[in-house]
Structures are given as C-alpha cells and as structure tokens.
Length: 332
Image 1 (cartoon, rainbow, N blue to C red):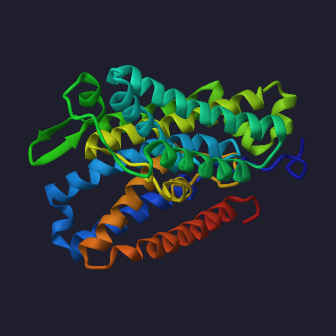
Image 2 (image 1 turned 30 degrees about the vertical axis):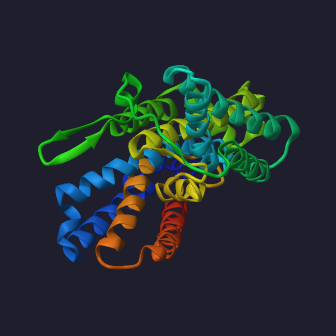
Image 3 (image 1 turned 45 degrees about the vertical axis):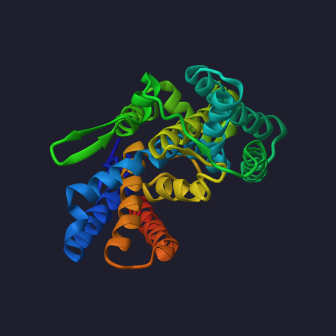
C-alpha cells in the first residue's frame, strides 16, 4: 500500500477537550473568586454547611446522569424526593409501624413511581418529558393530599437508620454528615457501572442509537425501565436523608429540584441528547452549582437571583462543551 492510499493516522483524543475538564476549570475559578470576594466562604463552618446539603441533590444527580446518558430524563424526581419521606413518616405516626419497615415502604413507593414512568415511556412510546411532567403533578398532589398540605415532624429517636442516613460527626473544624459518604460511595459505584461495565456500554449505546443497540442484542427497554426505577429510588433516598437532617418531612420539599439536578448533570458534561455521560463531571457539576448558590449569598447577592446565575452558567457551559466537541471533530 503506497502513501497515497494509506489510511490517515488515528487522531488521539485530547484530554483537554473532554467536557468535564471545562467544568473543573470553571469550578476552580468560581471557588477562587468567591474565596477572594468573601473570606468567610472558605471557613470551616461555611464549608460544612455546603457539604451538608450538597449530597442530597448529588445522589439524585447520579441517577439522572445515567438516565440522560440513555437518552431519557425524569422531571418527577423533585416530587418523589418529598413523597418517600412523607409516606414513611405517615406510616410511623398514623399506623405505629416501626421506622425500618416504614422507610422500606417509602422507598418501594418511589420505586413504583419509577417503574410506572419507565413502562409508559418504553411500552407506549410517549416522551419521557410528557410522562414525567405528568407524574410530577400526580406525585406532588398525592403528597399534599396525604399530609393535608402540612409538614410532618420527622423521626427524632436515635436509631441505626437515623445514624446511617443523617448521622454527623466532627472532623477537626469540619462537621460532616453520613450523607456525604452515601454520595461518595454511590458516585464510585455509578462511575464503575458507566465506564467499566457492560451495562454502562449498553446505556451509552441506547442513548447514541437505540435501534442499533437493539440490533446488537441490547435489552433497551429493560435497561431504561431499570434506570427510571433507580433514579426514583435515589430521589426517595435523598428525601429521607433530608427529612432526618432537618427533622421535617414536607410535601413541598424538593420543589424545582428536577431542574437543578438536570442542570448539574448537563453542566458536568453529560449530553442532554444522550449517548455520553460522565459521573466525574456530574460530581463536579454538583459542587459547582452548590458553591454558586452559597457564594452569591455570601457576597451579598439576593438569593432570588440564584436562578439567573445558574441559567447563565448553564448557557456558558453548553457553549464551552459545544466548542470542545467541534474542536474534536476531524478536519478541525
């Protein structure tokens, strides 16, 4: 074969063109900027406050990352966040159930929501946007009806479940919660599944080209249903952690969390159209948006302006990711 007919050399992937690298750089800039603008931003007390809330949204974001990679998303996770904890506390307070079975029943309820979402999307071919938007209204309304619109006092007795879900301890000047370890452990597991397992290959293949994946023997419907169930389960778990942490199970908890979680995942570099996901980027996105929420308050910006900042950051990150993708295309 002569030089003219030889195939062109394979292009090596430049790590700097990966979308999560742009997220990491943005995170470094944001943390440095807020630290300079508000010296108390990096104080142990403020860092502890950020770490207390961050894992709850982060746990949901891990499931959403896998679901988005498969080409679907779930708008009902904010409502499910409230539902699981409300069901558990109602069973404890109204029926006398023990806390363990009550939490299990709450999680099973959340799993059922995910199962219904998955079955309707896959078996009836209805858009996940429409299905989960409708489910958001159904679940939120159910929580309000069950609680008559009033928040429920959470379970205050010290049990192994409370310790495992929302226990806290001091590490030097920092106050850490058990939820941080849940988030870290689940992130490692999700990262392994997405990048090193056959299931992760299936998820990416389904999101890239569902018909081609099915032709190769991938059980696309079963995988999607499982991901919907997983995402709802993680949302319910996060809601229970939150209820124990603040001693309150509210039917309106998690309002608009679905948008914030999707923002975290997309900002982290996961493709909104499916086919590519990054757990590492999702973790960075969780930290980034939580730091922004906390930092703008620390520097004196009204908290109501948070959505403006988040919207601007999302647009900026999407433009950066699009530029990186174009830069990596052959011939550019």
